[in-house]
Amino acid sequence: MGECPKPDALFVTVSSCGTVAGLLVGLSLAGLSVPVIGIRVVDAWMANTRHVDWLVWGLRRLVRRRLPGGADLAAGPLPSFTLLHDYFGGGYGAPTAQSELAVELAKQDGLRLENTYTGKTFAAIGDWGRRNPGKIAVFWNTYNGVDLSSVVGGLDYHRLPQVFWPFFDTSGLSR
Figure 1 (cartoon, rainbow, N blue to C red):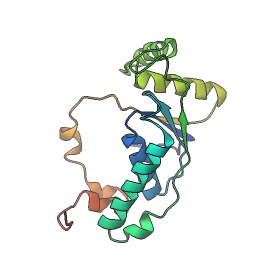
Figure 2 (cartoon, rainbow, N blue to C red; figure 1 turned 90 degrees about the vertical axis):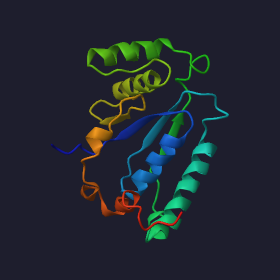
Figure 3 (tube, one colour; figure 1 turned 30 degrees about the vertical axis):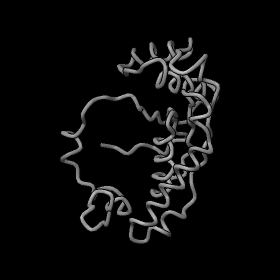
Figure 4 (cartoon, helix red, strand yellow; figure 1 turned 30 degrees about the horizontal axis):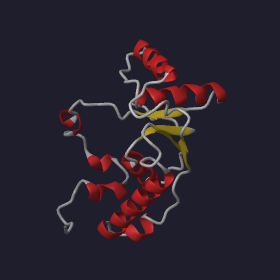
């Protein structure tokens, strides 16, 4: 299996802000400065940069407390983050013409999306790609109800950067 080239941007749907906060901290821990572009799909009182900042602060605090050398790890620079509001549409759960078209285009390539969350993010990637020909984007697909435990259960976490190992071997952590 080959490696993925470093992307120019990572796109993710933003609702509770937990996924995007985790991605920002995880990318920082991995030393990857990939810009993250979030697509807001819920009301702005819930999905906003202040909420993301608060969750990132909490995650970094957890890393500082739980990992050996965590204070140094959690001090690394975060990737840039942009929260786009243009794809929200008429309200929570409301599809847009752009999201419906994006879902149909994704379906042609065997990618199953829905039109109120992931379809809006996929529409944003399409627009970004047309403005940035030749650039590489990663679509962080948050739409998945498939149990992957049988797939990941046999994977060796030691193949990941060592900074992530304590998250898998939690025997020495205090609660």
